Length: 339
Ligand code: PEP
Ligand code: MN
Image (cartoon, rainbow, N blue to C red; front, side, top):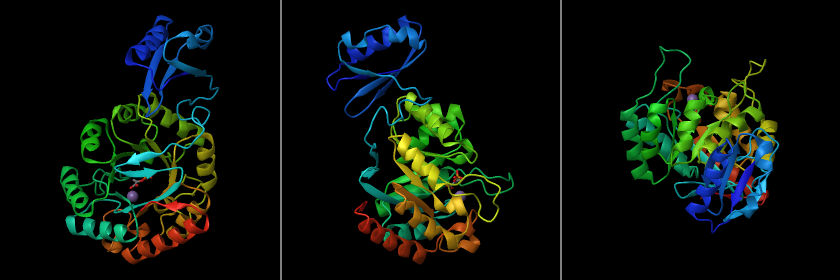
């Protein structure tokens, strides 16, 4: 059950609702939105149903959501949420291109990739400093040194940055230096990490776990929302199937289901989905045509020398060409590219 407060509800009104939930043996999760604050009720639903919440000051209405995710459900919020990354609105009326290096390797490689991203029309930049690698012998990311390079890029290009966190201990610092915190596929069900990013005061991009159903993905997002952070962007990045010819299997159907079931914006990462450069642009175009709210792609000026994921990185000229194609498709569909 979710109690939706009126826009005029005071902190005391919200506290009174939370206190009543606790007095009835439950737990209350408060999520402060730009217009409405909502209180999620966890506990004995039958007992909650017996209470006339609308009698309480500041309560607008009560919603019963019979799904395992509530705050991220479209039942709560019929319009798609717009998540602001820096000043860039992601979702609803716009299509967003996010691009940049998979990993920050050095200043020159990072700047070249981000320059290409900007030339392509990307309005958000990606670049990771903590890499969750399959092999412990592979490059694990530059850590703090990488953050400094990204800060420099942020100053030079003026674009907001999304950075992955792989551990609870990194969340507060990354929230300070990035415009959006990403939780990757391998941590998509790391519930302690999800709770921690849920407490951060920054938007969160949540990738779909590589063996997660859409339902499980939305429940993972609910962990973040339940802690008070509803600024969540979902990212479909391919799932593991029996098919080995692409790195993963891009699930555009799953992307569309997530959009239908949730009010959160949903983007697609075709780079990690297919893992092959020559397929990335086509899948990015397909994602836009299928209604995704954005795409995120890897860029590298020298992919054969890349320390991570060179095989899927677009060359600078390829990402620029893709940017033009996306703009043309967006226009044909009457959608607005973020600029
Ligand atoms: C990435 O985007 O660099 C990444 C590690 O992605 P995923 O978590 O989807 O594998
Ligand atoms: Mn990668």
